[in-house]
Amino acid sequence: MIVLQYITMLKGELMLKNGTIYNTLLDFTRWAQYLEVYERRSIARFIGVVVPRQKAESKKKKSDIQHRLSRSNLIKHRQWPRGGMAELHQLLRKHQKRVDRILNQCAKGQRVAINDSTFVNDWIITSLFVDNPQGRSQAITGFPLADVVKLASGHSCSTEFKTRSTYGSQSINCNSFTFQYLEAYAKHIRPGLIDSEKPSQALFLNQRGQQHQDIGVCVTRFFETVHPYYHITTTTLRSMFETEVTEATETGILTEAERDAVIRNSGHSSTTAHMHYLKRKAEDAGRTTISTHAKLYGTVQHTPAIQSDGDEWYDATADTADTTGGINHDAYDDDVTQSRQRRRRLNWTGSELHHLMTWVCDYESKYGTYVCKNWRACCDAMRSTSVFHELHLTTSSLRDAWRRELKKLKLKI
Image (cartoon, rainbow, N blue to C red; front, side, top):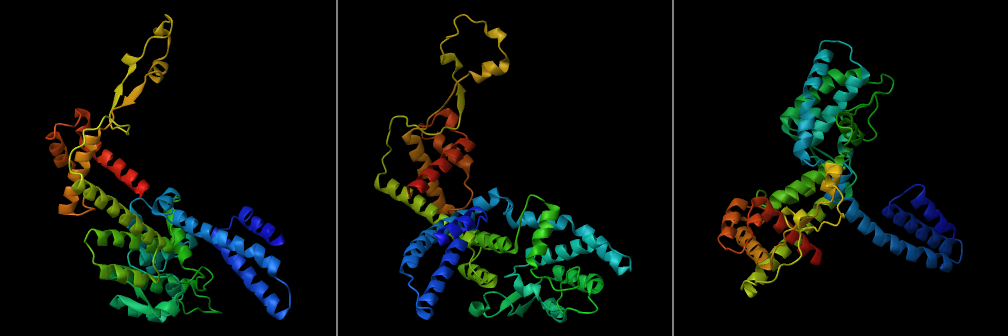
């Protein structure tokens, strides 16, 4: 009971994740095994309580990760910009002039405020992660000043990172643009931060003249400074890059070998990118199923109108009987009158949906699954079938109807 009460406190007051609770219970189990072997204690009742709870937390851990690290959830909680890496590049370039001005002041020997030197530090580190594909931040946290010259060639290697037992070495990448700022930082900013009593050999120093404990904090701090609604971490940047690489691989822009190289460089495989890949596979299965169904049952089914979300509204006020008992409508506000109007959706028929999905399958078989559809051509093709209502023969109506049908298929799968 003490253990269960402790777990309740961890989940309630401290709001720890299910994965953390699982690891805590795992430690308890190992501790109990020590008591059984070395202290001659009976642990049967203890194990009977902890192990089932451990299994339950393991299941919750998986579902929690799948929900928490999905791209839609990250965007919702402002941990992933809607514009992806391109948006972060724009934020970075927007403040480049300020960094140049501060560096020029330092080059002239002028004093610079602490806030300005911190901003330059954070901007250059962020550029190192945004303008260049990086792995884990630990390798850059302890990167020595003496090795800066190696980055002039474009990259250097480090063995100081979390997953070195698996990957051995990690590449630190640096293009010519970022290298110019690294040199300027080492020459003009870093000398003013050195602690004369305990000089550090690391390239990047904090305001106390010591190596940063976690250089990823600088990246997060920069984005929170220039865009308070975003919480971006170096892990997010790796996930974002891998996810966009996965998308480019699916459309044929990149090869499988190029995607594998990105995953190797990151030092791990992103959960978000993996879930995005699984989502795409489910969509592919849905499209293939539609095509297979069309080949097997190719005849057009003229079914009655079915209940489906439509695209166009029409005013049904005229269909409403006057039940006001002679009340003067002019005495009411326009807003009140409008609120009483009823609107009905124009339903899609089975024939319309069949023709639409067949056209999409044929288009994707010719031009690729993730290529933008030519909805104007689709509109012309659907008009020639003579089964579509005029209100459905618009590019937006056809596109939205296709998206709804895909969503239904994914829910069935």
